Image 1 (cartoon, helix red, strand yellow):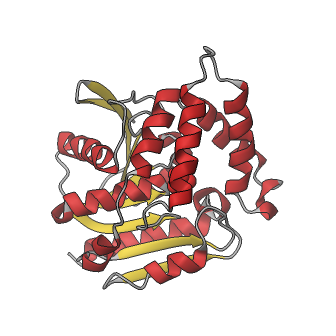
Image 2: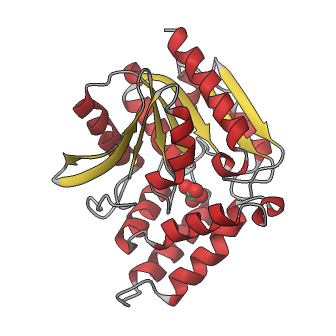
Length: 275
Ligand code: MLT
């Protein structure tokens, strides 16, 4: 069921499905809660699953000009508080993983488990920061009322790269859906997220000090985050679990839906049983 709450005078849209222990799914950059439609339907047969349109994405408006990972984590916390939920497994896809790490740092007592779904605790490299600035400038300076030519070209170039090449012809519908969601992300949301990601700190210490179990879902064909680096990070937490997907890039919930579903289900079951 789709619901809304108010946070910092804006309406935050989220979906709430199923019953029982809670798994939170946080989407990535240029995504919305709809990327998890099928994945959350499946999980919700076993858990209560909450996914949120993070600020500036989907139908949640922007809140100011910079969406820090902490701001997005606080927004998520406001959703859980409104539902009276106190303990949850937080799974974040890519940028959603940066938010999940900020969440685990701010609210460790509420985090029963953490899943970095194609995500990292490392900050941006200097080169990546420059890229973020360049893209933010282009998006900001576009004054066409609807999606501009650059935006369309950017999305049409970017989205297929998120999938392993071998999956592109098999997952045409999923690629089209990811493109459509990316194209409907408002410009101010794109810029605010780019700024927020650029200024996020390293959260290696959050991993190292985490009392809860941490699951890393890693795509061997991910061109955004190299699997070797993610495996090194997976050495940090005291209780670390890994799923390395041979045939996936950056979009495991589409590219390996069964494997990722089974792993997250098993992981969350273990996190809640261990409490
Ligand atoms: C994402 O998928 O959320 C982005 O690739 C994250 C990023 O740009 O660092």
